[in-house]
Image (tube, rainbow, N blue to C red; front, side, top):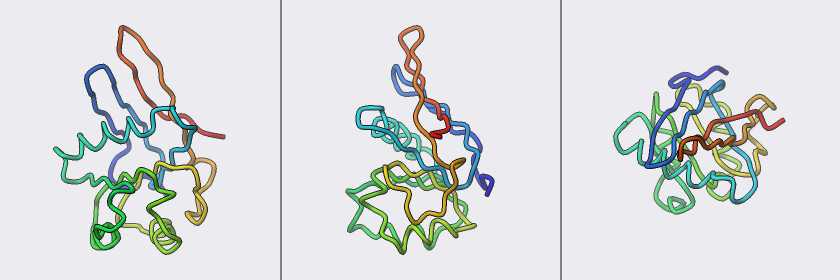
Length: 140
């Protein structure tokens, strides 16, 4: 399904830039440790503080009612880091079938989300003039 809210996410943080072209309603970012996934999450979390259409969750929110927040929301972009830890099977099914919200999930295991290879992305980074730019590329 095509993105229902954002087709591009851009933000800057000191010497880092995030510029994501979003192709689908659910985007799963995979990658090895040390590729910048958690750093990018923190930059997006800062952006969410200024944009009420974006809500961020990670493993620290496991006991804070994030499920209710997701299920009651409409027209929000949810960015979820450590999705492997945070999302149980029921939430994975809910996200896979949710037509009211958009998701960027960061993790290693997309099982249960009914995703295609087009939905699976990796971080791509390049550095120029002392600034590192993070973008997305297809994982497969």
